[in-house]
Each structure stands twice: as C-alpha cells, then as structure tokens.
Length: 511
Image (cartoon, rainbow, N blue to C red; front, side, top):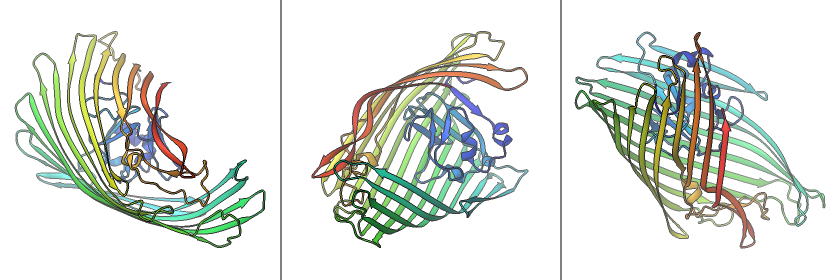
C-alpha cells in the first residue's frame, strides 16, 4: 500500500527456507547480492553497485559501527523492507537503495531458541552458536541474543606482474586465520498508557583474530626468490546503547525521539619477517605495522508524524550525529605518519507528505537537507571537509483498476554518497613493497572530496497472482555527478593511489 517504491518480505517468506543466518536470507531477495566467500558473510549490495551505495538500516536506524548483520537470526526479524528509491525519512545516502531490517518483539510462546551451525572449509572446521531468549516480564518485553563464533579462514592467492621497467615477477600468498567473536544484543520495550513506549537496544561486540601466512616473491628474469612469514593479529571491541521514546500527543499526532551513544576500539599488528632474503634489490621487507583507533559516537533525532483530515500524512524530523576518532599507526614510510585525531558531525532536517489523490493515484513527496563536516588533525596539519546536499524526492503509485491489486510505481529522486573518513584522511599508508609498483601502490586520502550526487528514476509494474505470489518488473537509471574513483599517480618517486572526483557516470538496469 505504500506510495514509495518498496518491497516488503514478511515472516512467512523469511522462515520458508530455514536459513541459518540473516545473510543467507538477504541473498534471496530481489536485486540484493552478498559479497565474499560462502559461509563467511560479506558486504551487502544492491543493483550491482559497490560498497557505500546501499544503505543498511536496523529498525530505521543506521547500523552501529562494527555491528555484523550475520549475528542476527532470521527468527529475530519481523520483516525486511527493500526501498528501491530513497525517502526523506529513511535518508538519501542510498543511490542503489535501502534495506531496512525490522526486529520482532518478544515471543511468549517460544522463550528460548538455540541454533548450532557447523561448517567445514578446506579441511578446517568452524562453529557458530546463536541463542535467543525472549522476555515477558510485565510491563517489560523483549529479546536477548548472543552469538559466539569460532571460525577458521584459509586463503591462497597467486599474482603475476608484467613490467617492462622492473621486470616480470610472481607473488603467492598462503594464510590460515582464526577468528573468535562474541556478539550480544537485546531489544527491551516498555509500554505505558496513551501510546507511550520506551525501547532500549544495547549492543556488545568482541572479536579476536590471529593468522599466520607465507609470502613468496620471484623475479622471472634473474631467478631471484624471497620468502617471508607473516603474523597478523587484531582485536575489535564495541559497546553501544540505542534508545527510542515514542508518545502519542493526540489522536492524530505522534512524537518519536531516538538517541544512541557508543564506543569502539580496534587494535591491529602485522609482523613480516624475511626467511630467505636473496634478491637485489630486495622484493620483500622486514617490517612491523600497527594501527590502533578509538571511536566515540553519539546521535540524537526526533520525528513528528501527523495524520490530517484530508488524507495527508505529514512526517518531519531533525537528526544530529557525531563521531570522534583518535588513531595511532605505524607504517613502512614514516613511523609518525599515521597519528591523527578526526571528528565527523552530521545534521539533517526533512519533511515528507504521503497522500491519496483519487481512487487511482496516490503520491509521496519529500525534501531533505543534510550537511556533514569532517576535520582531521594529523602530522600534515589540520584538514577540513564540509558537504551539504538538498534532496527532493517524489514517488507515485497508480492502480489501473482500484478494485484489483495490480499497480505501477514511479519515483523521481535525488540521492548521494558521501566520502568516508577512510577516503578523506590525508595520511600515507604504505603498500609494504620496497620498490613501489603501480599495481601495488601506497595509499593516501583526499580531504577535498565532494559527495557523489545522483538523480534517479524508477518505474515498476507489480502483478499479484490470484493463487498467491507476485510478479514484478522494475527499470531504473541513475545519473551520477562527481563520481569518486581511486587513481594512481607518482609522488616522490613512489606510486600512490588516491581518490578523486573524476566526473559523471550513469547506471541503469532491469530487475
């Protein structure tokens, strides 16, 4: 019934296949792909576009940093909403689309759910244990969830490099890593009189990784060969509390206030030790690299909804979010090049209206303004980046026969993709190579990046079958300006990869 271009996958469809985790459920949804090796999880993408183009929401809020979708069980999910085009309420950082995962409330009939998954990959066993406990302590209801993972990850790769300057060479990598992790989260809800509700969602994540590897590099022209052993260790910890207060101000007005506070910490150390140095010049390095950062974040937003007598439903809101990072790092080029302090401040205001024009037509209009300011203070000095975006949005729904369910959806929207802190940080990160190559360059951020802007059109036809089910066809197109891509240049005798706004682009498709 929604005027916005939306697909809703309900409980029946989610349970039908008996999937072990939410990532397997998402793979089955139209237009959605999950990157990475089977069983490992990975980045969630829509319409073939890369990372950062798809917005992932949990109960309408952006995911907490470090939170893994794979830690959720399908049994915890009430429905999954796929928005092909953005709305003012859900945010316009969604050039490819938005996936909103809506969690279930506590289930009285099933107090506990325990699921054990055992898998085997290249001779190494991994275990995943999920436990869900449903609470029903009046007036408090909710769920407690814990996920424990013990996973082995064997990897192997081989690269052939052809170079008329440095000579042809090969490089092979083999590694075996072990990841042990614990995810715990809860959804606690208190319901009072006159539509008052308080929902608290705490998250705790701890992950520990250790991996041993072997690198072998060969010069094909001279026959020189070098090997190195690697030890990669990392630890990630995160704690966050999200909350929502909702209250009905009158029969037609509802107010929601959301907040979130959290902290995450990451530690990484990589040791690379030469075992057979013989090449001149050397191919590999004896090196130690480390990185440590602490992120502190907070958010506050409010939303007011009013149902009007003439059939209009107006939603307006304000959002404020801040993140502060303190980072220490050491690379091959400069022991002090990685230290920085960075902060990001985002605020947004929006309004939208959903209304019925007549028996055949309904519409959804919206306008959103969002601005993001990022500042980083590193050894190279203070760098600042501010971007502001206006995003008008228009959706329409047409029913050829109001007595039937068949319908056509149309959307004309503006969306965008902002540079990440990783893109903006103007500090050099070495490739770990003695001789810099264009195929394995160093990396440096660009504090002058502008956001990508996309003007999009979507048209979808949906036919509902009498015996159940739906057939749909959707065509879409996005015209993108200020496209961000990494380009390789030479700086101080080394090849360096840096992101820039290269120009315009378009993407289109049929689902």
